[in-house]
Image 1: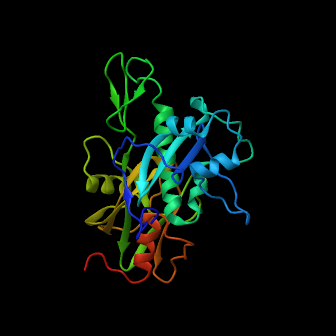
Image 2: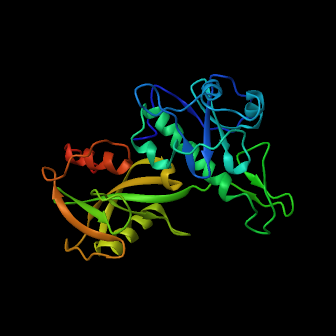
Image 3: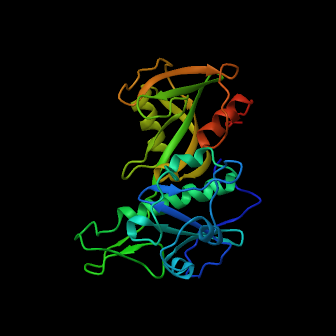
Length: 290
């Protein structure tokens, strides 16, 4: 999964610290990220030192380092952020900007995790420029990762939406689905956001029932995963069918759903997401209920 970066260690806690030349600087233009290419044509995350070589800065690098926002650290290296939409200090970056989805295939994998996590924090800063209560401009907190309204005192934190995902099993078969919309057209698992006042297992039962018309009985927790592509935290469960196996499709959500034996389950190119790992676990003979 994308957050499994061992032997590297991720440190998410908020810090106030000055950057070093070897720290990474992630430069955004609104929601797109600047990624240069190396001599072999591969995209990479630039350090402050590399930015000085690559971009014609309008101001000294020291000013750039002063304005950069600390994000997090991996091992002993820190990651910082700047955004041209907030009046940053270099020339336009046309032709070198990429959407957050670029990190689905970015290498090395631990920097893919760093990149998409930075994208989530960047979206938070862009979306919380103004107070959601009174409309006044917000300011970054000096003590935590938050935006504060100096007018009414409202404090807003990064959006992290809990969502459940479940692998439904029946007689040694797995239920796989395809989304009705969006760009992802591979087979997937039933998933959805948790409603207000709802438990995770309650959300599993509701999502399965709404999307496929099926009922599930036993539910066991598998793992969780941060999923910064959609500002989510994915909570994975395996569940057992309880009742008839006839599928009634919710066509507004799914284009297809059917039961697969282990042998019929297709191979996936990676295990980037918790869904892909859960599908592979079952395909390889895993039994979550044993």
